[in-house]
Length: 283
Image (cartoon, rainbow, N blue to C red; front, side, top):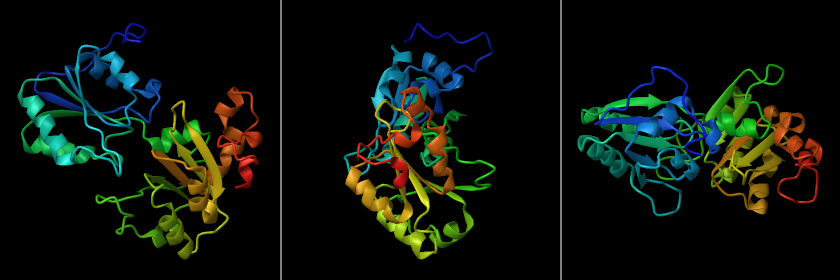
């Protein structure tokens, strides 16, 4: 893997000693890395990486020290403050530090908090965006987050707050009324509360929903359902995070754009990745 790809000739940025680059690793598939991310991997001598980073990506930096800093809900995890200060410590030791985060570091990834800590401690940094799961993960399921015949707006929402509870500061009524498509990150645990809030605000109970778990990875699973059945179907199929929830008519596009199912020789309407013995579009 490390010898199979070489960067084209270009004036690539240099990761200097004492610098930290905050880099998005994409939603899972190593092929969704950017060239800037690959350039960073080739130069870093210390990599601090998250739980959602595919470890095959680390193969591109065989000589670097790998420091795991994953955080998963409900499991023992490093504290965010400790991770941020570890980055400062490594930089002050003259290391070339790559902070590798799943998806995009600034989309529900706490990259902003880490960047603030680095600035407060006088550490030089660079931001390398990545493909967010709410866009790339849905694309792998055959769901475009925008389509001019379907929606002209999309709202990205987190499914939990800093404490791990359902976010109390979100105006679900306003989102229900104003957003044609809602994309929810980290929402499986609170799916019942989220559905109840949207339904209580007048959202159509029969509105299409797609839940994509393990997006862009070999273990990807897709549940197609409707809003009033969402929480029950998630529990029934035992879907586990990480997962993206898409609520709105865009979810129906999967019925014709499920390109992974077509590659596998299955017709989209017959594809039932969770094996429940019924056509997926019936919810």
